Length: 478
Image 1 (cartoon, rainbow, N blue to C red):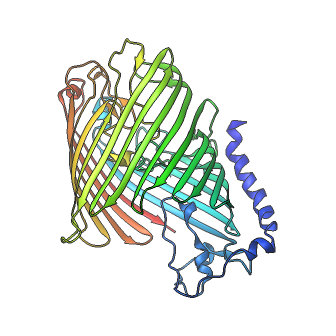
Image 2: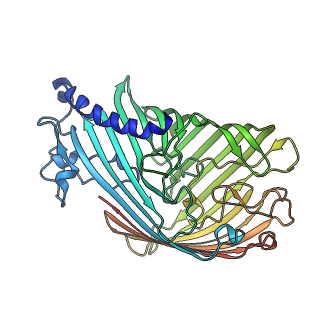
Image 3: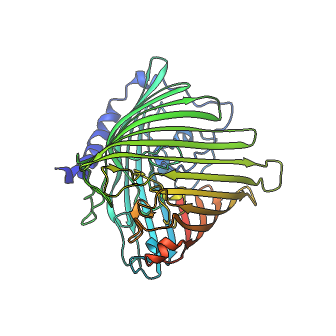
């Protein structure tokens, strides 16, 4: 039955759409205010999460029009602009060249390939309170000799959920049910996994209550696993779950504090020095803000529990801070990043200390995939400039070590490099990074990223070698 989840949700969306439209009452319509006549509203931006876009502004005839706007905003009520249907698409094409996947320890040759992602979605809104959102994905990796599950997913249901927004007391309650995507903070540990080709989705029940300056979030989810044997065969199971209770507090317009408790559970975990049933309790705290040219983002996580017959105690901390010279040409920003994640100190002991980065975003370090949060100490200064309003150039250099030499060197997301565990030498290498981003139009983005990683002796003795990565990307959203 679990294998039929995607087909079930898609059918449910098709069935519920006409029912929801039929239940829009005049009272619900009357609660919606007419478009403001003060200022012409701006066209929506193409957002990272497409379901967050609100195209009801196209009900205002003063808003500028673009080709195919008739599909971006299809009104379903003559009196309520917030009741409408919208279609959209996202296409991302990235060429990658990586001459040392996992530092070449698996005998990998030069890899030159394309990551191609196409997403199509439909978004139904009713009276500004009900949303039915469905998104299909089709992901391919031409020329990649050994594609992984995050590279290829020929055709499947990426998201399909029903959402309700309802005033409760002085706040707003939001509920989502179905297949969906979510991320926290800088996406260090809970992300949409946008770096690879196939994004991370969750079959989940999500609820949050917003009462300024507070926000309370709770959800239960089963992470979606990619099968790709036939279309619409991705699945989730009760053998792998992720649940969170989170509290957020705005301290000012530019600063915020949050904390959450999570339960990460899988029945067949496989690690370098442990395997079996995993039950991991997670506590996380995050503080971020910007003030007087300074910006900062600090996050710390502790993990406890068990895996197989071993007790888990693992931890990690990440910090990024910088200063932007707003009055200097190209507004340069000097930044410094520091990350540390625990490893297992005694491979034969009863305590398993290798940090699990959960659902990390490869963007956080580099797209090259050389670096993971497991058993890591990482320092990276950077310089970012804006040659024009639509371009950004970042240059960085980093060095990294193992937190303990008893554990392995790990590549993204937490893949151990063979032959490194227990070997001498904490220094694992250094890398340089260049990234250029250009917003060509509000709908088209171009990016180039290049990374060169010089490995330390512990990797070289294990048969690894220096690695170079380059990625060239075009992303279009409609």
